[in-house]
Amino acid sequence: MTAGRGLVGGLVAAAVIAVAAAPPSAIAQVSGPVADGTFAGDIMIDGGFITSDDRFTVEYTLDGTGPIEVTLVDGRMDGTFDLPGSGTMIGTSPDGAFTMDGTIDFRIAGTVGGPPGAYRMEATYDSTTQVTIGAGGVTTSASDTASDRASEALTDVIVLCDYLLGRFDLRIAQEIEGTGMLRETISGLFQATTRYTHEELAAEIADLRSDVNAWAAEGAPYGPELAWSEGMDLVQRSAELQQQMSEPSPCPNDARFVTEVTLAAQDVLGEMIDLYPGTTAIPAATLALASGAIGDGAANPAAAQALQQKMQVDLAQRFADVDFNNSDALIDIATTARMIGVDSFQAEPAGPVFTPGDLLLLTGAGE
Image (tube, rainbow, N blue to C red; front, side, top):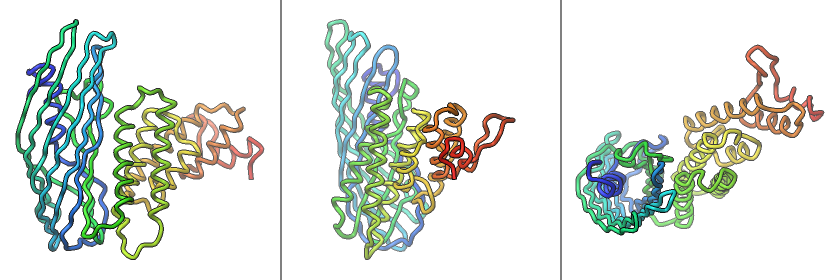
């Protein structure tokens, strides 16, 4: 597939093929003993992306689930997977002169294996796209097929007790990168176990990741207020799942889920701050701590620290813009600061320094 094949070949089919074939990227490193065993479960993709420019906007969705079986012996991995799926493409132009309606069918199948630290994925992939394009009152239909192979590194697989978990980010085709895309990856996961337990919890986490993908792909088209509210709802769900997983278990099997739930909360909170500066307030800080996205004991300490620093910078900007006559805002900033580890603020480069306690005193709510 090349960009020179026109709209269908370069923008549609190439996008689908590259999404299906792109290699998994690193996920959070989690320490833990590698357990020998044969694991069976699912590998899945469920998400989408949007491209948009002055001429038209195209929304893509991809959805696929298939079996994966993996054997681990002394840390060496040998396994197979088969991931079929389908998707849609819907395109429109601002003036309605251009429309596109298409379907995608793909299949990725192959093996995973190798010694610890050198796991690789060897896969073949096939896809078929069918597209109907309307322009100037003329409707044109086209189809395209492609097949290829990929050999890529598979990194940071998590194995804890009786469970195997992996998360991967699929890159979208280079042919359409930079064309108004809201994001350049689609996240997926595979999860397998030597015994069939916690199916409902696994399904809830898969649904959470699917909804996070959808929220990130949709971005601002639904308006900042609604998108912000939906983002907070996703972090709330992460916090509720963390609470559900905090109950004692005879085997630390829930650790496979803790990381994925934490990653979902970190993804949403980080993107919310980028899209909606000023997000860092008491509600966001409360959910960030409850979901394990920040704070001591977070499942992904490096990502937790990065998110906490981003929240601290966002809060510092809120302080720089605050009206000192707004007591509610000062109380929120002071309380949030204590929650996310901000010791002080400086009003301006050479101005006075205020601690959270100082801000509370200004409002009459001080200690």
